Amino acid sequence: MALLMVRDLSLGYDSRAIVTNLNFTVEEGDYLCIVGENGSGKTTLMKTLLHLTSPLSGRIVKGDSLSGGQIGYLPQQTQVQRDFPASVMEIVLSGCQGRLGRRPFYSREDKELARQNLKRMGIADLEKRSYRELSGGQQQRVLLARALCAAGRVLLLDEPVTGLDPGAARSMYELIADLNKEGITIIMISHDVEAVLDYATHILHIGEDNFFGTKEEYMERGAGKKPAKEGGDLA
Amino acid sequence: MIAQLGLYLSYPFVRYALIVGVLIALCSSLLGVTLVLKRFSFIGDGLSHVAFGAMAIASVLRLSNQMALVLPLTVLSAVLLLRTGQNTKIKGDAAIAMISVGALAFGYLIMNVFSTSSNLSGDVCSTLFGSTSILTLRPLDVWVCGILSVVVIAVFVFFYNRIFAVTFDESFAVSAGTAADRYNLLIAVVIAVIIVLAMNLVGSLLISALVIFPAISAMRVYKSFRSVTICSAVLSVLCALLGILISILAGTPVGSTIVAVDVAGFFLCCLAGRIRGGA
Image 1 (tube, rainbow over the protein chains, first blue to last red):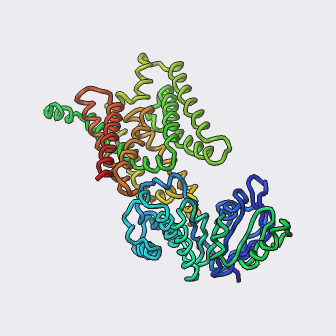
Image 2: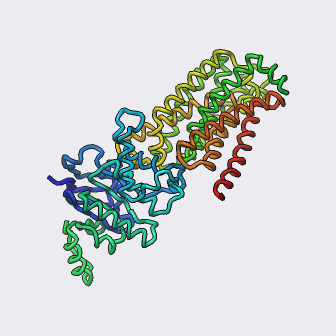
Image 3: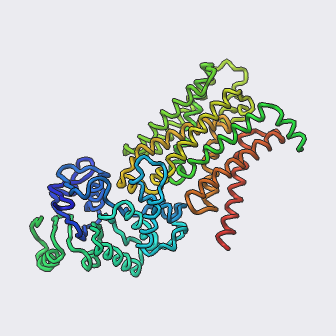
């Protein structure tokens, strides 16, 4: 069974639809990239997948391995976070909050998991540093480590390279690609289509005409579409 | 001076004032960090005005225990304010401004029209600036204050990790299965309790200072959430102690003296932060 199946989904605010008839499927190990213009509803789609907002209509079917809070989320950073007084460890550990249950404090295992994920991101030496003193790339790695603490199998990344310089962005993409090779399913929002085509296995384009397919299909369609600038709804 | 202090400390009402002052300072500083970082500072300010209005009603009704009316009313307003801040399209701060200024006006109106007290402006002034009330505490007040403080501290310690999670990143917290709405509500209710407690100490106009100054000062010097929280608690208690002692010795109003010490503490922390950052 697929990890995630979306059927006839419509999204929007206050019953005004901004995306309609969205259909796509995510299998285990996929690297799905969601592209589209600003304001086309990418972030709304992601929030819907996380149950932060509810869809206008349609269904989201989750596979057995995805029940509960098994999705690790990397939100776009807010201004408040950029100068938030917190140590790296405190933030990564907060990724374990779903595992707390009724306990008030984090256990030794939680802390061990946090350290492992810091190591995985190559920032084990930053553990005691303050988050607001880190570079943009380091901050993103901290938030990625936090997402990994929340869920080891699926990651939802919202514009993970925004505000990073080209070098840091490249190494962020490499890091995500490595995680995908380890078997983690990646769902990523980006407006940087050129860069993601190097890594993604599937593309979901939302906007005037929705498209879902493998990267190869997307490139073929793009090549054939350019002169005519028309095309049916391939979804 | 030491002898004079010793003499004052032999009076029970001075000891009560010190105990209550320390407890209130401790409680109010705990959530200050969250309040400042969540941009909730204005809710604290609005609630303190609501508490003033409720206090006016309570004193006109000649209730023996004013807390019994003020506390529920303030908690209710906290819940309402949080709702309006989240769901409506009208900016939350407009609603808060309306409620707080309205409560202030009605409070004074009620006091003015119905009060039988001969010293009206003195009553209003002490409710706003807490000039004398801390020195007239009865043992019952001390107990109520002590119990509420223990509850506030226990709630804070127990939910510390979740409060941090909701403060740092609400969307992530929700995605990880934390009921962020519930914790926002909890934070608002605890703030309301703290404000009602702190009204005894510094009066309703100066409460925000007690909540916000220690947090901002601590954020200048320390860099992790835990150390900022601990530092702001320690700082707040020290400033309150110092403020109360100065006010006893110099005969200045308690509330404004404490806040003045808090302000001085803030500038010291700024300086300390500079030196630490530069080294």
